[in-house]
Image (cartoon, rainbow, N blue to C red):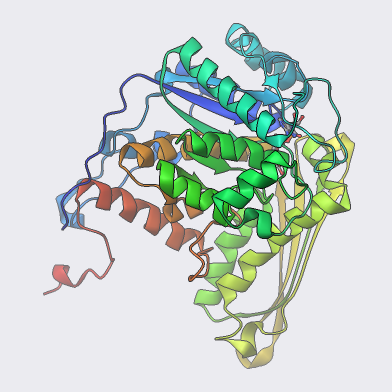
Length: 437
Ligand SMILES: NC(=O)c1ccc[n+]([C@@H]2O[C@H](COP(=O)([O-])OP(=O)(O)OC[C@H]3O[C@@H](n4cnc5c(N)ncnc54)[C@H](O)[C@@H]3O)[C@@H](O)[C@H]2O)c1
């Protein structure tokens, strides 16, 4: 056992700043408001409903996670954010069409009070969108300073003790790290020169991290995961998490694939296709935004199956991912997976999965949990990449010398062991010999 970490108490107000007030953000905010009023249960949220086993199984110590670590109370959260459309959160939630109008009506006044601040936006990075609520600036540095000013004004206005920021904006076009992303100095020079390798999402991330605010990326775009912002986070103490929330098909993939691998069943092909009709689907209809998503979605299977260790089972796996924009479905995505398996003596089998899910209903608890856990990390003095939050993400951030952990069950163990470590409790290895000695 190690000594517990010193964790500052979660007193006072936590400001949750969401970039992009679309389906995910509005469903998160409306959900928290409804839960606070006792109108709905926080299903899907580990911070609100999860438990954690401590010590030996015979001790029967299984507190709720929120009673074990000091998390901000939902009543102490205040939400704000930015969007290129100036509709208030109630109107935006109506447009998103995720929650029933009667449910939104019950929290209408809270939602109407949240108006998005003008966004840092450039259509070069999200080609299918355009909107009026956009900042003007001399260069990207100036825009970053405006975001810093927004953050400080929000904090002041709402009397926040602490803040967190989550990028819930649209998926930006595919980008790879460049020399401009290499150091804080090169990044700041690139901001000054409005270099095109600085996407809008990076401007927000820079502003948050410079202010020492925890930052999570709920989308797959290249944002905080660049050396310059990692260095900045180390300097300011900002904890980071991302990328791309693990919600529909990838969630199922990372539940099923570890099971197949555990039983050493081969997989020759995994074909995944989706229909989706919300604004996210519309943005992903642009091949450049889809490429960002595709890269994020495709990596999980390779890391779980480890074809380099099991070439007979997984070497030639054909993995195809498609997303089709189909407006009639709105936020109610439908995903189909066809998995071509190989069993004993090489006999083929098939597994079909048809998941009728609700995208933002699966995403909202992740936004909430990431915000609360990042705030906890900040108070515990943990900065930089928070690998224990991989559990929530399709393309988890990780140190350059290790591969990302995609197996949902290992991710959960890592998360819970991190909480035990924070509190100085024994880590659970599941060895269990002590019960039989
Ligand atoms: N299950 C899920 O819903 C899920 C899962 C994983 C990732 N994501 C990602 O989360 C993000 C949000 O998803 P959504 O369904 O809410 O999409 P959405 O289109 O409903 O909302 C995104 C919002 O971001 C705004 N926006 C775009 N660029 C902006 C900028 N530079 N500044 C401020 N606002 C900006 C848009 O105007 C829009 O209102 C997407 O990138 C999506 O790919 C969603």
